[in-house]
Length: 138
Image 1: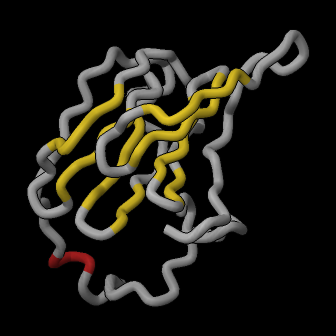
Image 2: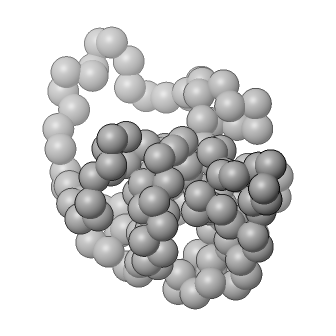
C-alpha cells in the first residue's frame, strides 16, 4: 500500500533495515524512466511490491510492472498524460489502481490490461492529485 497503510503513516515497523546496516545496502538494478520531465521531475510516487513484482508509475501516468529480482519489465501501460503529482498506485484483488490527472483506472496486475477507466474531473475539480487506496486484500 502506498505509504505503508490506510492511514498513510509510512511506518516500517518490521523493517530489517536500520541505522546499523543501511551503509551495507547496494544497488541491485535500476529502471530508466524515459518520459519527458516536467517541473516536478519524472517520478514522485511510492513503488508497490507484491510478491516478485514491483509496480511503479511515472509523472506521465505510465504504469510499469517490473521483475523484483532483475528490474526487467514484465509489462507497461502507457497513458502519456502529464500528472505533476503526487500520484501513485494501489494494489488489491489482482488489480492495479492508478490515476491520470483527470481519470481513475484499474489494470489487471498480471497483464497490465486496462479493466476500466472513469473520468473524475469537472469544471470545479480540475485535477486528481492523490494516489488511490485499496481497502481490499493484496
